[in-house]
Length: 225
Image (spheres, rainbow, N blue to C red):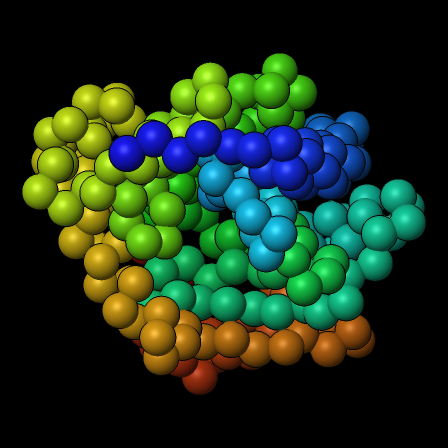
């Protein structure tokens, strides 16, 4: 099924991409390589869409906060999130209700990085070229950008077709789709760990405190691959 965007949709997409670009340029100017992922990368946005900026490798939380502060950007919340006991903990700097900058607090596994590819991801250079990429949305439909809007294809039962469009091995997509489906269900009850980080502490300090009393987290921080 093809969804044709109206003028309002294109305006919302442009506004969200400009917002993403502003944040990404702050980080790129400091030598980082952030991505924007999800609906802003794919194009299937609405007025409630988030602008999710992600640095796909561990960085100093204090330095990122300093870079944003120097650009006049102050997070409203600082949240440490861990989706499941086996997944990497991440730092979220929540700029507003619809905007965040996040990064992992430990090296990520390939399968964890793969979720951003499945969702659709763009570098700043790609964003500025007005590129849109295919990806899977929260309803587990494959969004394929077209000149007028996008095609919407249910992934269930069409793994081979979706894998070809996403340019990944069908076996990998099949495995990741199962995880995404479980995550969609788990999302109804929240994430495994979500902690507000007080201003007087860094994310790394909080992570160290948690790891001291959580053997499973210590194992995750030691193990990658």
